[in-house]
Length: 154
Figure 1 (cartoon, rainbow, N blue to C red):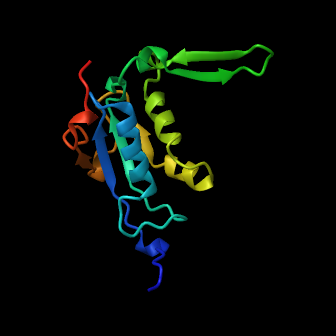
Figure 2 (figure 1 turned 30 degrees about the vertical axis):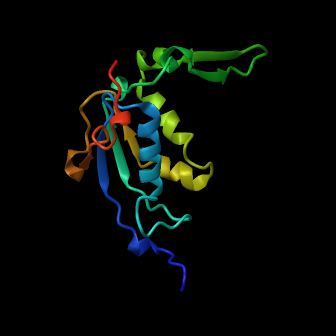
């Protein structure tokens, strides 16, 4: 039996819409990472961009389990001695760009490399319920109903 390897002509990309309101961050990120890579397809080929285009709305209403909202820290360094800084997940979600929490979670679930950076270009995250991709007729994926553990009340 020969191993199947997809060609660029065989790739069928879809548009998927996911509402993040009340959904647990890690479960959302793992599903989105799988969709971006294309691992949900029977024709998955590791070296090709097989994944779907994913739109996430209501990113500011994503939930975290435990004390992660207060304890999870996102670090960066200014480049100067002693210049390490951090913000908690709660500060970012209440700040100007709450979609960055989801983007970072998905980015860290993909393998590093040029292909993963290209696949991250297929992810669009919006803080509110509005998005400019209505013309693509995205298929709605209800992540909350797939498993009771996927949602959490505040």
